[in-house]
Length: 504
Image (cartoon, rainbow, N blue to C red):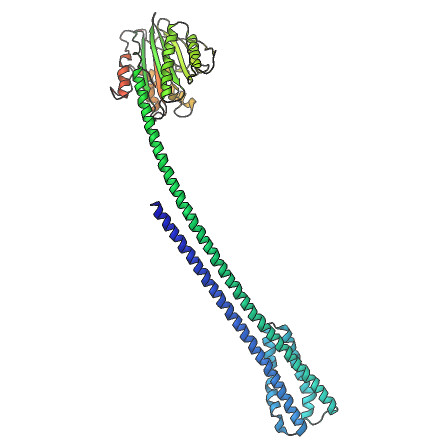
């Protein structure tokens, strides 16, 4: 299709070039014709003027011949040439002067005016006295004066003829020069258009080659994109397999504490992430909770996520507060040169209604308390694996029965590319969840935030709630966690309930 389109464009270009050449040739031909016509007209007028000049010389000779014959014989029959010439000479000279002035032959026009005056002098001083047979001067002197006037008249006519001949030659040469210039222009134009045509054809050839290269490049990129999509799909299948292989135990079931969790993977298959959460029952009505997010995506993120989770659980079992737990995990990940991990780890004490936690570059926990607006808690310090020897500050939050701690990964607040807006939306969703009875808090918050929109990054949410004063009959949703996550993998119920396993 592209080649046919290029061929049509090339054909149209050639036709336009040929039309341009034809137009220039026609224009040149018309110009040559016009120049030749004007030159011919000018030459014709000059020759007509030259003929009148010669006729005026003949008429003057007839006048002179008639007067001479009459002066010798006194026979009026000799005056016939004079009479005939005398009737036409002055009108001829007037016509000659007008033509010369119109044709701007200034030298000839001046000479014609002088010839007219000379003829007048000759008639008055020579012809008239002889016709009257009463010359006022000596015949010899009269003859000499007449000869001088006739010579002057003839000199004027010669001047006129010479100027007209010169002008005729100039006109003819101008026409020839103009024709030569037009011919040169036409030849140059033809050569130029031929060069342009050759350039157009060469540009068309290069354009065709470029389009061909672009087509091949597009096909190559499409093949590479298909290969990448296949690789991403394979990577996601491997990550899902890893998630299944390293599935964690269900969330704890403690009458005085209730849990909810949800994990929604990114809709983009290339965004296989490393989000995770965990909770472990401890003696004395206490629970260890943790949530984390590995920087980057792919299989390495999934592997690092499992390594960080296992390290955190192992470190917590060794004892110490959450700050010490994160410090030990940081040293281990830093020594392994693993990707950075953000995390929150802490203890929930159902006996004292206290949350004790430490954070490592992770978004702040959110606390929901009865009768109060949800609020973000303090947080700080560097991600795990960033710098050896990092200390992690310990935070204590005294709460009340019925309070809920919400932990989440950054996908829950960064979906709009504005963290402040994301945090405000999270707070509003948490406030809405607090107004609901027997609600899966984590799933409610996620559904409120995204409202059916796809997530650009993995989102994990874990909530830990203290039971109210009347703890009997508290609904614990942890039993549904594994089946819910299996449903998202295509092996169980639909997503949206509590999730109690690893989230990549």
